[in-house]
Image (cartoon, rainbow, N blue to C red; front, side, top):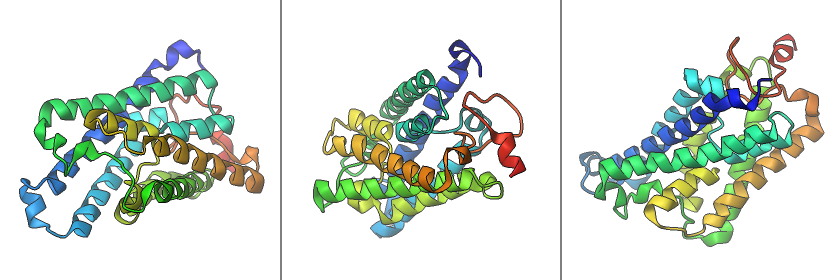
Length: 263
C-alpha cells in the first residue's frame, strides 16, 4: 500500500474514465436520437435506436474496464461502486474520497467538452446531454428500478470478480448488463446506477428532475448487494476492488488477488 501522494495517477484515471464514458454517451445519443442525424432517420424505431445506444455503451464500458488505465485504477467510474468497496473494507477512506471527487469532476469535464464541441446538438431536447430522468411511471417507479438494477450489477461484480474462473470476464459481464439495462430499463429511470454520471448530465442540461433518486437508490442498492454477499460468502471472499486485475502492476486497494488465483 503506497502513500496517498503516490495515488494521484489512479485518481486522475478515474475521472478520465468517467469523462470518456460521458463523451461516448452524449455522442451516441446525438447520433441516434437527434432528429437531424442521418443515422436517427435511418433507424426510425425508438426501441432499435435505444438498442444501438445500449450496445455502444456496453462496448464503451468493456473497452474502458480492460484498457491499461482502467486496469490500473480498477475502473469503478461510479461513486456507488467505490462506496460499496469502502464498506467492504477494500479501499482506504481517503482513497475513496479522492476517487469519488475525481469521478464527479471527470463526468462534468466530459459533458463540458461535448457542450463545447457539439453545442446545440447536445442541448436539443432529444439529447439533453444524455440526461437520466424518471420515466412516465414517476419518481417511485424510477427509484425502485434504480435500486434493483444497482443491486444486480453489484451482485454480478462481487460474484464474478471473486471467482477465479469468472474474474477475467467481469468486465464483459458488466458491459453486457449495462447494454441490457439501457435496452430494457432505460424507459423507467433513464438507467443511471451512477450519481456522478447523472449529476454530470443534469449539470450540463440544467435539468435536476429527480436527481435525488440517482444519489440514493444506486448506492443503497449496491450496499444491499454487498450485505447479501457478505452474509452468504463472507468478507474473506472479497479479494480486490478492481473489475479487471492485471497479473502485475500497482494496486492501491487492500488486495489479495494472489489468493484468488490459488482458490
